[in-house]
Image 1 (tube, chains in turn orange, green):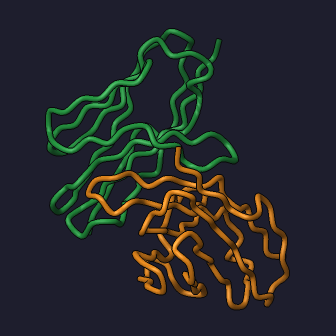
Image 2 (image 1 turned 30 degrees about the vertical axis):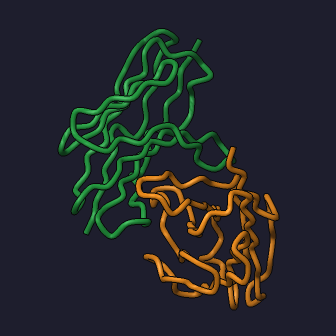
Length: 113
Length: 110
């Protein structure tokens, strides 16, 4: 079974802080993704990576950056946290073969005060 | 732009009362239509992938079907443990990126 592990289930930070969310997968997947999930807005893609050191913007990249230094690890960075970034953040990974599903971690519920 | 719309937003069922969830999609070059189950406070759990119109897949009380414009998730004789939010998502010709619908919250009462 694919295991996607997000480092924190709950996180509380202050406005203006730099925030790091970590995600690790154990299936040697090439592709990794960061989403945020908000009531009424569904899941929205922030960034994804198809290889080490490679990244592409998703639908809502503003205010975020990412880092992929190793294949198994994909980090989401909030450069200067703001209250509108309070959300549930979900990481996913996917193999390279066509039509493979994305497998998700259990999420990090982030509150920015 | 790819679009996925799910209906209804919420569904209350009595245990044993079968029903269907709808997922309408507009996608350029559909590569796959995915169904996920999400429990409160958890990440989405993969259920099915459908690739082409006419395809069907089953798992326990769930059956997913696909046409050229819609997918349905049929829940047969549901149990309270089937209560969850069900999400569908499409992957188009661009590959890799999923477009999610808003989900259907299902509550099955004993």
